Length: 116
Figure 1 (cartoon, rainbow, N blue to C red):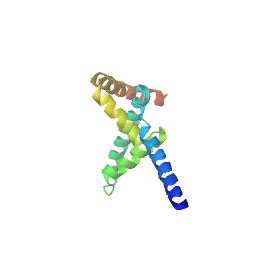
Figure 2: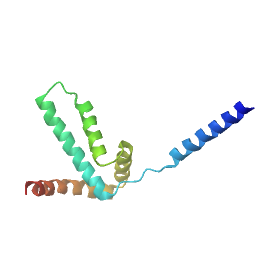
Figure 3: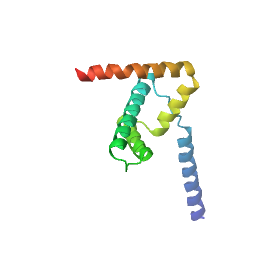
Figure 4: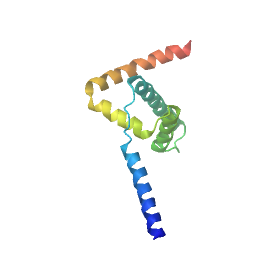
């Protein structure tokens, strides 16, 4: 009898914790955060391209993934959060266009700011 009660309690506990994880909804990243993260991802990809030219033994996609993970870590994001937000912006073309325009204008401003 004790074994059955322990098994039922364990199953109920597992069920409750698994339900809580599924109910957590991933939030869409705010526009300004998304802009900065995308800018950093583009920089990471460009940095990887330069490394590939210098060292042909590097695997482009593997190294890209490592750099992307570093960017996500730096911004305290998960890969899922970023891609969920990216899909959201892609599904809203007006916001996506504004985001892309903002990213492209953000770059030159960053260069000017960093050179001062």
